[in-house]
Amino acid sequence: MSLSIRNQIPGTVTAVSPGEVMATVKVRLDGGQEITAAITREAVAELGLTAGTPVRALAKSTEVALATGPVEGLSIRNHIPGTVTEVTSGGAMSGVKIAVEGGILTSSITTDAVTDLGLVVGSYVVALIKSTEVSLATV
Image: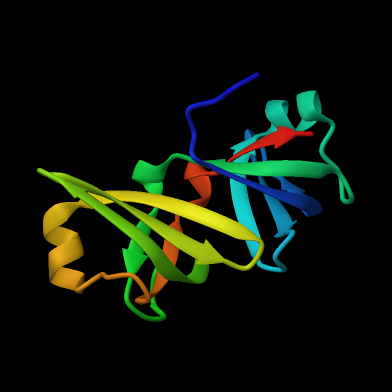
C-alpha cells in the first residue's frame, strides 16, 4: 500500500499501556528516539502490538510543528531534535525537511512561521508531534 503521509519512520514497540478505549504505545525509532502514539485499544489488538513488534510511526507533515530549541511545559509528548536540510516556500505554506537520527521528517508550516523562526538550511529545530497525531503500521 502506498500512502501520501510523508513521515514514515521505522521503529519497534517498547511498551503498550491500554486504557478503556485508547492505549498509548511507546516506540523506539531506529534512530534511537522514543515516540508515543495514542491509538485505540481496538487498533492495538488488530495490529497485534506488543513489545518487540516492528512498526512504522506515521505522521502527516501538517501535524509536525517546529521549535527553534527545546521546549518545556508542553503536553506534546514527542520532541525530536534535528537539523533543517531543505526549505521550500510557496505562497502561504512551506515545506521544511529535517534530518533526524535515523531519517528525515517533513513539516508543512506557514511561510510566515518559516520567516518568524528564521529557518534556513542548517537551522537546529525540534519537531513536535502530538501523540494523538501518530499512527502506527505493522511492517
